Length: 207
Image 1 (cartoon, rainbow, N blue to C red):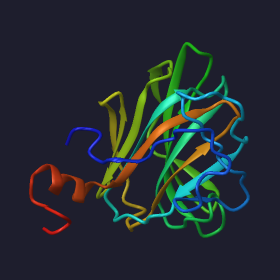
Image 2: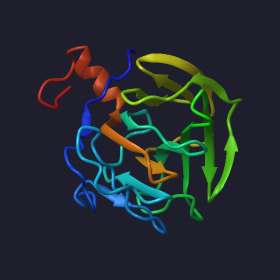
Image 3: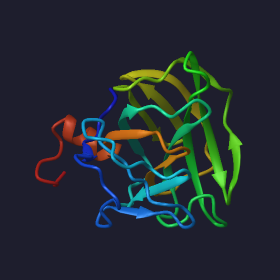
């Protein structure tokens, strides 16, 4: 299935502080993700260690994606969270999720890492994926179907890995490690439903 297959959920059209509580939940113990569209004026910044989760829970087969407006600073990273069993707790006791971390090293060579987290303990799945430097305008994403996890950049599949530990429905979300990162056009959701729409098997929400 081509990537992305899901629609944009949230288009950051202005400097938003706080994010809309109608759609987003700020994870326990973290400050608000003051995410700003890359097309606006950066008159405020995200907080370091900021985490927000989308309030809609999706079935287990999920997708998450975004446009990178401003990459993290050297030493920083942006994480995409999926199959999170909680919309309020990230890295807290009882929380489990998968996490794709886009890491900036020195502005020359960056890398991507995949983790399974449980109550704050992270287990890396596979080895690091070395990539060319992240740049503004990059389309970044991840997809999970069954036990298969795909990592995508600019509509190209970087790698595919398997892990069958976390199997249930869950939430998707974002984590910023620094005050520099900006994102835009947050997308994601149920890939099975997206596939049915693409194949013409669903009209007006009815199979």
